[in-house]
Amino acid sequence: MSQPIRKPDEMPVNPVTSARKTSIQVLISPDEAPNFAMRRFIMEPGGGMPKHTNAVEHEQFVLRGRARVGIGDDVFEVEANTALYIPAGTPHWYEALGDEPYEFLCLVPKLPDTVEILE
Image 1 (cartoon, rainbow, N blue to C red):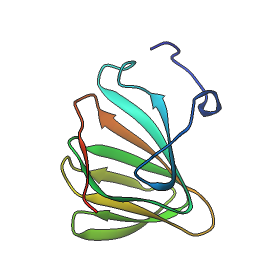
Image 2 (image 1 turned 90 degrees about the horizontal axis):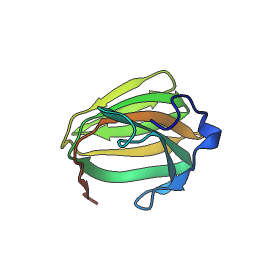
Image 3 (image 1 turned 45 degrees about the vertical axis):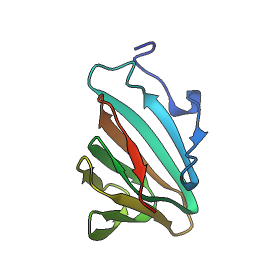
């Protein structure tokens, strides 16, 4: 890892092209750590991600805001201080709720990942 300690305001933020009003910030890349990558997602009010699958599992922790999240056939309303687990290959989607951004950390294993948009 080039720098073992860093602040998010030092890292680039990029739009997620398949989503609306959503950006990603890679905090620890898969090239820097032996087992996991850590990303931060920010969905502005009205933002979201379409239904999709990933070849790898996701462990997520909500930092702020609220969202409706579909995982498989279930729909949940989540808020800050909530942890989510999304199994590999499971369809999932996001819809930010309220007037503040929905922000979460997402950890994924350092394995090949394929994203398939289902909508």
